Image (cartoon, rainbow, N blue to C red; front, side, top):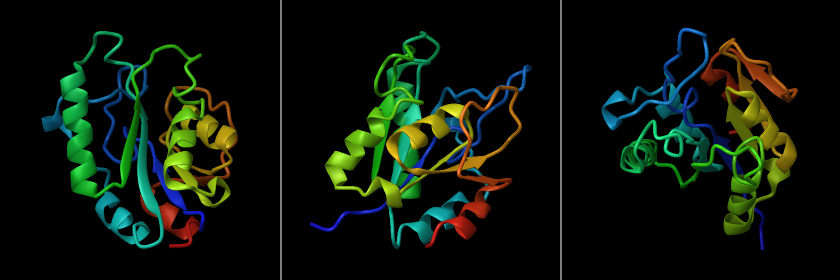
Length: 174
């Protein structure tokens, strides 16, 4: 059986714009009406879809922290999935870093690998946080880091760095 290739996308900051708090740290939106797509994402996913499965992988601990409802998070994710024609979505609601699925742990990527028979060495993970880089590294995917210069330490070295999302097309053979 032929192994497949995928592009894993973080949600907030990569597929949709992430609001930034007063400490220059990104936050998740709370309602579907707040969705604003990152500039160029619709063209990017259309081009990548020709050769790759497109999978969103996101931590959404706001539910467990009682900062958002499961209904709101699911509505947001469904709209993104439909609008961008994603192949699948994996969500971890945990706030506990020991959870195998919570990025930087690679559990969600491994679930996708099993479901879609992926060759992780041929996959990319596009993210804007250290957790995304960790999940990519621990799973064997190549990491593409969109650096928004957030006020947080980047704990993993990315394979590639970009200053805007369109830059990923120069890296990925699409």
